[in-house]
Length: 271
Image 1 (cartoon, rainbow, N blue to C red):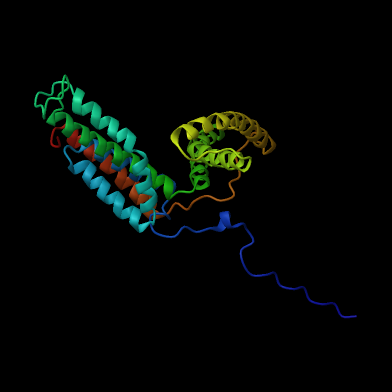
Image 2 (image 1 turned 45 degrees about the vertical axis):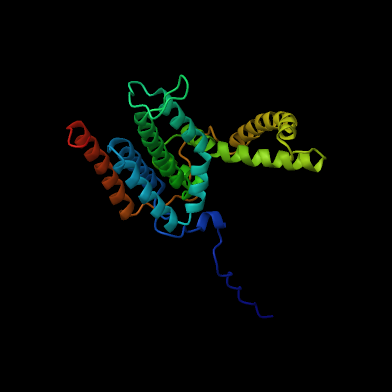
């Protein structure tokens, strides 16, 4: 009886997709540390360069990069989410800017000023540039890539855990709120309609949110212990983002840009 030859293994990747995935686009393929360095440069430029040149230039660059990386819509949504903060900044500075003496009009005891309006718009533009720079780095960087890169660069396990928990806290909270709301609707709770009905519907949502968060903390602690979170020795990373020559060049350029902007501002050549 002749022995049959072994069949060749099936072609294709043998690792999961999240291990072998390759980001599309130049900005998405950059190392997470490079994106953070570029974001720091953008924030420093927005807050250090005087007038509208700093925030205007940064916002223009962010819009172009977001459009190229197909995250412009998400970036605009994040910008709209910051509108309450922007409105409060404008109102406070419009009416209460110290030392402003150029009123636009008199509204009873209040007097909005042109200086307050200008300063409020400038502050709002800088904060928008800051939030957009950080948001663009977040939108184009998977969380596991960010944490793996931090681990590769020597950040301890507890530090990586704190960063990961902070980054994932808001998305996870929003996701949990949606799950609880869907479950309550399936049980017949009315969460739509007039504003007083929606306010009344918040009470049944509060308790599941709090208890769900507490139980998730316990589950996460048990999962970390089962995976050897406190075990001695270095971690073996399954996948780390590539750190190419272009990444190192961009990080050095970003660091040089921060130093140059700070030096120009200190010497008085800018501002």
